Amino acid sequence: MSDDRVEKIRGCLTTAFQPKQIDIIDDSHQHAGHAGARSGGGHFTVHLVSAAFAGKSLVQRHRMVYEALSALMSSDIHALSIHAKTPDEMQ
Image (cartoon, rainbow, N blue to C red):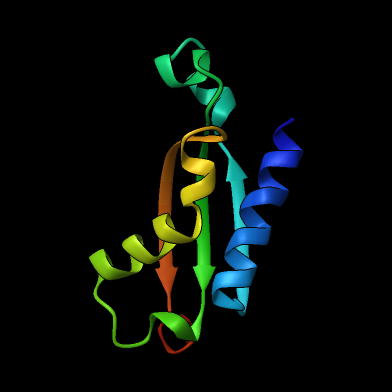
């Protein structure tokens, strides 16, 4: 199930941002017994590098990611840690 969720997240983010780099870490095991874990949603950390973030504030970048993942937020994702950078910021 976890691998399926990671691939769903990867698919949504790849479609939305055509990232230069994408790393998705499933942190759900660290939250066993947490209310979100009991309801079925997972905890994930996303590292995303995309030109789509150029000129965007941190808040705007996070909103963009949440929008791209909106279909998964009510079922597959309970918590999300986002690290969104531009390619220039990675150099």
